[in-house]
Image (cartoon, rainbow, N blue to C red):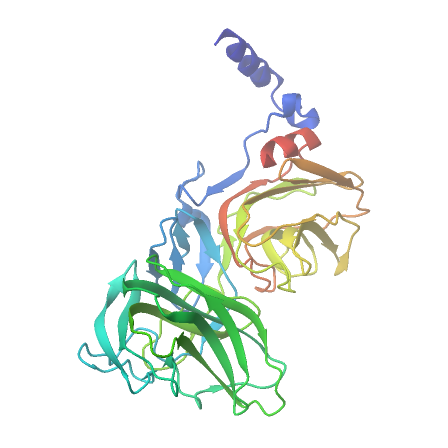
Amino acid sequence: MKKQAVVVGLVAALGAAVPAWGFFGIVPAPDLSLDFVANYSPQGTISSLITTTRNSIGTASDVAGNWYRFANNIPRITNQGLLVEEARTNSIRNNSMVGAVVGTPGTPPTNWTIIQPSTLAAQIVAIGTVQGINYIDVRWSGTPNATNQQSLIVFENGSSIAASNGQVWSNSAFIGLTAGSTANVTNFKLDLEELPSGNQHVTNFTPTATFTRIIAFALTLNQANTTNITSRLLVNLTSGQPVDITLRFGWPQVELGASATSPIPTTNAAVTRAADNIKATNPPTLGTNGTLYSAFTPQAPLSYGANQIVIEADDGSNNNRNLIQRNVSGSVAPNIVVGGAGQSVSSGAAVNTGVFTKAAFAYQVGNSIFGLNGTSQTMAPAALPVVSSIRIGSNGALAAQANAYIRSSQVWANQALTSAQLQNLTQ
């Protein structure tokens, strides 16, 4: 306790001198600190410190897998952090089970089709909501014969989703095993089908009792005659062997893009979730030198192919800015843009989907430092921009969204932290 008191007292006595040379790597208090996991900031309430623009509802999950809906212009904050994503459209018109009726056989949701061998029975067992997700339970039972050994459920009719050769789509659905068993089922396939060719983009999986989101991303359409696509589940059965299985389906989603984003509930038409654009409402006055920090977990695949900005200081445009991003190759790296021209910066390092990451960028002319997960790299930019705005998860053009859960963001408005401090900060 005495040693700790001496160190604290010495740091207090040194005051502003500490950031200049990084005494023991101790990090000074930031001018803006946003802890989204705890929904806390020493500068005030999170809601008063950020401005969110998203002209639609959005969903986000907590660490237990529960999903929540957030109204227009409300930040999507859970105990996973702040979810920031680009705009996307769910082309499945009804993923909330509207029109479904429990019974034997019952009625499937509007626009859905359930198909099974003539020797099997299919029935709607239950409809409801679990973990915030709309679901339906479908049971297949009986003994398939040699001429028909496949059951399937089609989430959208074949003429609804317009598509064309060369487009890249993602296909997803929550699926779980609620009763019976997988006995005598040879495989399960989440399938995106190109029409009229019938070409299939298949994702194999095995359902479990855990209601899990099955995701197939970056599916490139490759048929010249493709005009439409549809999403479906295929269940292949063993001829002559009895089957009794009940599967739960929730929030199927088909979206144009190389990654699957958060679920977009629909009831009777395709729905677009607008992009999240978040900025500091009244940021501290930013000097030429400064430091940006972000702790985040990317949700897009490594091969996503587009920049994903996690924090940026800019002048309200893309012409002058300092930033940290996950770039087109999946590497987390800094960038400096002055008058529309990029400066020489670090190449960073690749960070895969779902990997919790800490990154910090201390920028000053001739001696800038980038810290990533406990390491640091130096660079020598010839110039720095004049900046005035802080954005969380996008750029000055309101694009290049992070597609990530951002746990915390911090800004040192006029201090370029040292290498030791950045390593300490990003451990």
